[in-house]
Length: 348
Ligand code: NAD
Image (cartoon, rainbow, N blue to C red; front, side, top):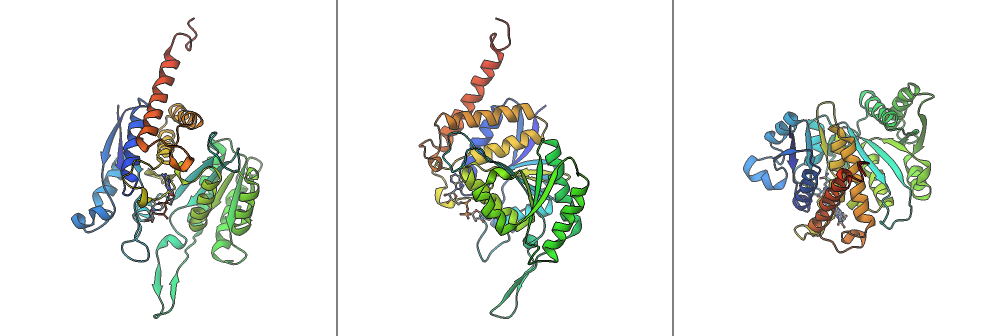
């Protein structure tokens, strides 16, 4: 039976990355039926909103979506479609793994970090106003319920994936009430995993320095929304940049898989951008759908292709978006051939 998945290509470099990723996921042989829907500036005229109801309905119906980046106007215009989508669907956990890939030049070789970012509140609640002509206020919302929920997600992820430690990241020395509540909630949840998963906390500024100096000391990080966004870009930088950083937004009823990066408008339509982040987001989707072996196979193929020297401009190579996807599709089919050959199956 084919899996019905909502596909939101996005804008900027989104559509070409979505096309490349769709081809790669089709080549896994799992069988997908793609329900393609659009959101963002391009649908404003037709629907009067960048996030039409039928897009949300499609995701609710299918339970899973793969999404390219969507441009958000800066300082004016509509609110971020990406944030609205996460809030409307209750996608409370943003999972952003950062793992080194052989063949990508970076300062470290063995980074393996999992960033778990709270996705629904904090300064992203979108509550801000001007106070007269020369001042503005943004309200930071932190609740015990959302903080305990994200902490539990991080610990459960650690248990399910054989990880050893969760680090809570905060600025509770300054924001004693809001970040203080986040930290207190993490400590409450950590007590339930005592003896199984180690727990510690770090102040966010110190955390940034430590990640740059000794990322190997850290494992799973759990953060409120804004720090999670910033620290996950930092972690992406440790393993080769935004072009290779995947993500998942997970809620109780739906999940949306999308890269950490944005729409990089200056590269749009040039067949240049790196589709790895969206392809690896697709691998996270395969795991979520219950295909861990296929996800492993896809991730291994991406690693092999990159290690073999086929890379896009951001990693120093000259392959275009579609050429890179071709190499993955080819890699998947030669793995298939190898695994069904008489030698591989042991029948010599
Ligand atoms: P960006 O991630 O789009 O791009 C920053 C730079 O990173 C690019 O100029 C490019 O050099 C590099 N880059 C990013 N993705 C790449 C890829 N796949 N391959 C190769 N290089 C890549 O960040 P930005 O310029 O700050 O944001 C552009 C727009 O994207 C903004 O409107 C922003 O709001 C939006 N955005 C959307 C999402 C999302 O859809 N979830 C996330 C972040 C930013």
